[in-house]
Image 1 (tube, rainbow, N blue to C red):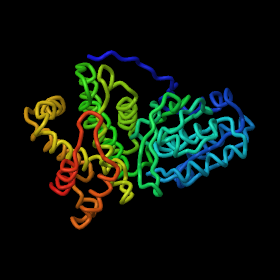
Image 2: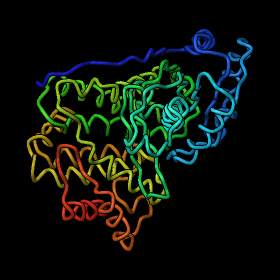
Image 3: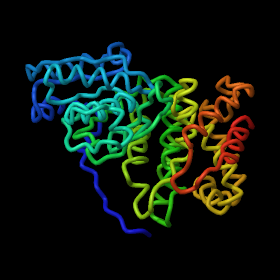
Image 4: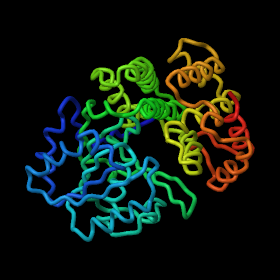
Length: 381
């Protein structure tokens, strides 16, 4: 086991009606609030009204920035930053899933440091401060509610990249599983896939950490037990709560303790697909994870087999891949590119962008030949 420092400054409020504490928390930061959300689902399902009731009790001045898409773009952060600076906002309230929260995190840094957002993302500038970020989560998937990571894509530079920084942790996150009842079956499944893929990145990281391996096992077993149940009974509180808590723990540092670093190669692959085709993030990860493991079973067969032993009681790398593929298909996630209507004629387009962006893992390096093999694997069943 490697040496490590555990750090997580986010105050997490979890459970039924947890957002009843929202006004009290925000009052600690100010009354000029930049409210960021997506394309309007929170207005249809009543969450917007519940949040606004809380803010009204503060006599808060609310400045709304909406329309953030599921694969968040830097353009929205530029606009939200300008809007926030113009109105001297004191706190950002993110209401939505991980894409909204990632945008809010980087908007916070951009406002506080008054610097170019993409220079921040490219690590050309070191942020020195932030304005407070409070999150009301409506989707169990990314784990962004309790970590220091944020991902944005830039269509001008043809990149989708992440920024991990200690200032990126939300100050507070509110998780009420009831807020996920209205999430579609499709996006519930993608969220399950997303949280599982996060644990895989840790599992295939550097170093040996047996307890962290057991955390990976437990989180995935929660996902595989309660995910299908939540898909069948979307308004079952216990099922939704178990998935929501699993998603948080999949990427709040728990699975990384004692390792040198996670790999993150499959996310780099998935980012290419979501950039090119606007494919939902979780849907790219089921395809990318299986293809990556098909490559790595030749190099780290024992490790791929060990994941299957933890999750399915199997003994071979092939069994691991086959059982994961079977599970992903059972919840309605794609396992090959044809499942998301990407044809073989598009192989060169995918490979060109993978090579241009030097898609790689932090532990398991990928050559151009490896990338081509991975794309070929993504076309296979």
